[in-house]
Image (cartoon, rainbow, N blue to C red):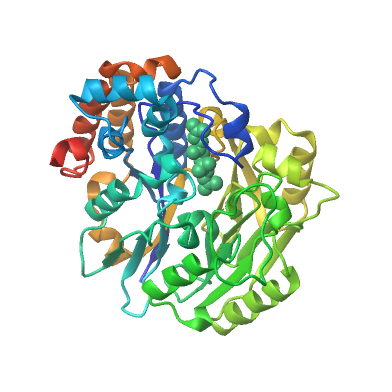
Length: 448
Ligand code: SUG
């Protein structure tokens, strides 16, 4: 049976803004308080989805969330009408209002960890929503994420959904941003590679000194257990704490993998040789030929990697077996990174082509091409069981660009978040979106 990697991209929500909310994420910190352009952000994301669809890749779309999250503000003690809740929060605790307005659910690589049916004990595709417990503005995403994923992958015969892990730092889980799957073919059993930043219970593992390590080993292990993965199909590795301290807040900022290939920076991991040998061995036993492409620090520094988001690229398999790298514009404007990429595609490596996309609105909050997509490997039968409303087509692209044009503002700054009209605009837009994507009622304002 044929199988595919389907990329579900997060649609940028109407409140996209630069809140400076993510300590440890250099771009989020340095662009704090700048004016944003939600309309442009959403159109940039949609343009990437359309381009990939036109290149022949399977492409889907994941809906944004209701923001401002009035229910979250109410749970923190603000009361009255929705407008009063927003006004009180603005007066008494502006950072909480800003957090409740974040459009961060666009970075759907953090929405969940997904294991394809070829890897799981019950031969279903398993999803665990990420608790995103390191940052308040992200920790409020998972209840809606679970409802949206449930509406997209509803057929219980093929899809199993797990609630987010306990909402404590010891089980900090950032989803697929720290998870990669290697395989020979998408439909064959593969090796799932979990990268953690620290251990919550075992003091032998080092931890970063400055910035938080968002993913714990214990969270990754819990997800592997929930999904029914076998020991032979899992490899754990620790991220190098010193790169976390340089702004690598997720593994997908320093490494990307697909098929049999891992593309990574020399400084990405601890005990790299041991990790590579285990990947080689385990993938080998599943009929695969593991290959790694290491980017040396002498050619691209960690700082260059963080600025350009070279590794936050999408590594895609083409029909002829070669690979294509989807990178953000910031890679082309960094001379060393661009030079590296030119040499790479000419060197006879499996990565033959690089395509550049302008995702500046998302990039300024630390979200590149790979952050914006959740990969779900599906066989033909499973793909047919996905809610067809969320699969990208030329007409859906047209409908969504018109929808953005109708509902989104082209300028948003912190003072606009206080405007109760923004909440009404968002709810009107999202209500229409659930009809376009045939999701049913998934937002708090639709179900309460
Ligand atoms: O969690 N930025 C996100 C970026 C997530 C990128 N995702 C992956 N690497 N997979 C984060 O730090 C910034 C929001 C703000 O500051 O307004 C933010 O949440």
